[in-house]
Length: 422
Figure 1 (cartoon, one colour):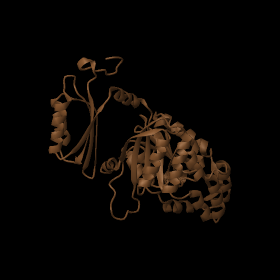
Figure 2 (cartoon, rainbow, N blue to C red; figure 1 turned 30 degrees about the vertical axis):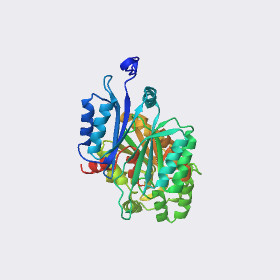
Figure 3 (tube, rainbow, N blue to C red; figure 1 turned 135 degrees about the horizontal axis):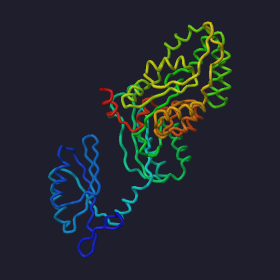
């Protein structure tokens, strides 16, 4: 034994034999127990093992080392006979020490997660994504489905189909890799998320959200503008700001000035008409059950953010204070305008208060003013965002609802179903 590396020599100084055995066939209870029991009688050492079942068909692989005194022939004879009796197909191959040692050392390579999110997964989507991964120097370790089984009948509205690739290697060019995935997303109605598989992935503690067009479908300031009879003017400014063509603070002041004189009574009727985006309530409900803290960081208004806070049970709310005097909107805001930089600052303040690292923070937003917080959070997600924002953010969800954030966190449908029962 040298420096922690296993070096086992057998007869006449020859390394003990290593065998890779692959088994396929109809899955039945007790198969793993029966096969490994036979191996146990010969004192085999398990170096690796893996199993998957698709539509009751088993694929089972095991890498074993024979002890020094063992003879390969009787081991294989007994194993193959047993597998034949169980109506399983098997093949085996010897593995050299150098090949095995290279495989062991490869576990130190960077590991990444590629998540495909779609309404209906297709062979073309899988083919294109796996091709991009290969061209960028990444090798696929495993592929698993995060969503439930696909129905044969017509796909219902809101159906989700998500698979996760675990890949290893060092991407040749991260920017080009991301551009290639974005190109696939725009062509094939699939979102492709690429993130490093770190200890923080399932250890996030805080999730911060933009409000307008993220938690809710509307831009509240546009709804206020419609009520004030200046809808087209304000919408035009809003769109330019969300595309990143205008400075947010400047555009915000321009829009606010157009709202001067709006009656306060309009606020409640607009709040009651707001609709959550797809998956919002499901996501927040499950985040709370998992113990996450949540926050709204909005360039909109606290009046509406607090309304959502009460409905959803959000922990923190920061937005702009809409100034009302004598029952009328003045066209001004009180205090510091919550722009992109302010959102990032508030995210850091909340993280410090909650005593969590920024790597443990998830930020979700749709506009250019969300990019600072998306860039600084451990997991920043552009949700149904404009092209400029999607290109600039590290991750994007455009095909599915807001609850798809749970898949990027590594949760499966069965995990979520269990939470829903609590």
